[in-house]
Image (cartoon, rainbow, N blue to C red; front, side, top):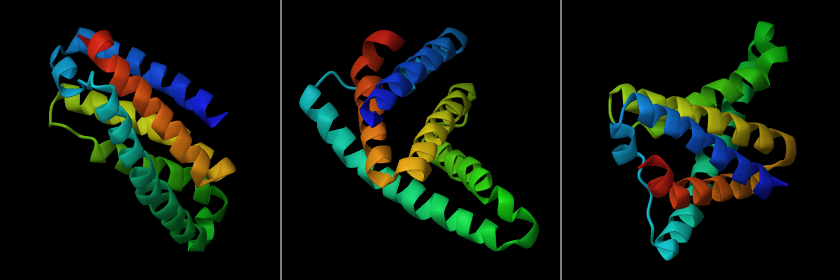
Length: 147
């Protein structure tokens, strides 16, 4: 389930990336992946668990806990934490301050929202699997789709 969601998420990110390339061609250079499959798998195996622990397990959980302690926002703790942690995830992927960079932040913020929801609904392993699969799709097909 999480692997399928990650594959679909990866393709959605590539479609959005293709739209960004039509607006600003520098996105193709910024978002280029790798064609070396061993490097691709190693990068995905490194990034997925690390980023999910930082942005979901720690970030989303701490933000939800803090917001949950604020009296009038208790009922909205998860949506607020999801949006804030996803935005932080997107900003962490800011390659440059430009139109292309803003587009990639939005792209990663959307992806982070999907993975964040999976984390909240089913747990960290599902978020890692989804992130890993999306990373394989985006980095593996990115060079050919975005060029």
